[in-house]
Image 1: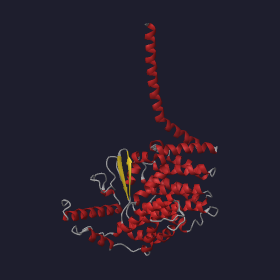
Image 2: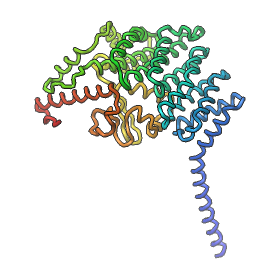
Image 3: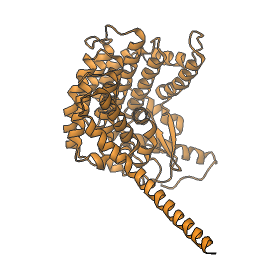
Image 4: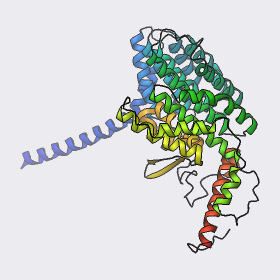
Length: 438
């Protein structure tokens, strides 16, 4: 009997000990990434290249998969100085690429920083990125720096810096990389470089003309400057370059169409859809080669050339069908993401292209940041408690403050509401539904 009691007490002690070990292990897992991050930052000063590379891998993983703003907010200058040093040290390709990605992720994690402080930090890192893009003789380093340059400019730069970097990127595209040290690259490497440059330009076009106050004359001047080059890119032998150029074309005309509609908000609700469409079309500016452009886009949307892989043809046709609709019919593409049981709707190239850039940089941490990072919800105008405001089918109009929207978004919302009211009235006249009450 005594032996049985002793055995029973032993089992209970063992169970308690296991429970304590489980809790201890769980706590350790929670804090473990913070310790790893701090150690990685300390090791970035080491002289051994392999040590710095390992530290950068840890840092990039932590920055992508966690919200590290509270861990780095007092060390931002130090963190960026260490990453800048690794970028410019030229010790290895891997180190430079990881450092460039680390810089982008650092800016993504600056959720509490002021606009002026963000701009100051941006200006400290800008020259190193520009110089590396121009001078590096490695294609992967150039591409990594292009991704980072465009993303941090989108996030933190002033309007004038966005303009300067946009011109810098267009110069790279228009001149086929003259003065960018590309002489020794293969045609495949050049295609990769120009594809990334086109993506970067599109991101900054969205930053300049889909956010804040926009002067239509400045917008149209930019359109007339860049569209001929984009038309040439649509004829590229590389599928990714064609798609990148086509998406930019969709973005450009999506933005133009927002401003091309009438500025007179005293619309006649008795106009039917056809009359409204005619009124809107009459205000559109004319692009010199509009017919040729649409013909090229339509050809790409039905391309069946057997010289191209079947999967490439399928991808191209799918994308260009959306592009044709955007340019010819002013229909915006839609991307829906299910995040934490909610569906976020991103409408239009001006939201989808930046979303893709964040997705590319964040990788496996993309959904985590979409759910938890205040910067992401601020950029894409959604809240944790309501649907994305670009979902025009949503009945919840409290998820955003219209006074905080740019004039681009206000024009977009006005036009969408006007079309919706016209549709309801037309259906009511046909007896399909009751007239709406405003």
